[in-house]
Image 1: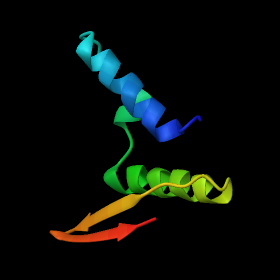
Image 2: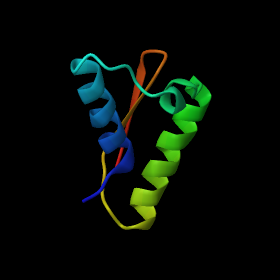
Image 3: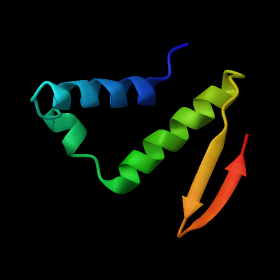
Image 4: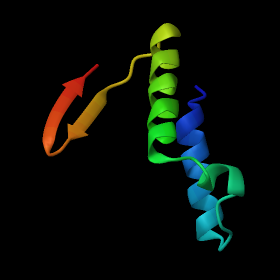
Length: 66
């Protein structure tokens, strides 16, 4: 199963562990853009009928979803 955001995160972590910095494209995303991309990825999983559990932490209040 290909989960783009997870693969992107793992690739970035791998680069950082090897002493390389994240590429310029990844660094320029704002928090809002990152959230939008993440929500779009979750929506794509839903449309592809791939299950996922979601834990949303908003100011210390935790919401669980499937």
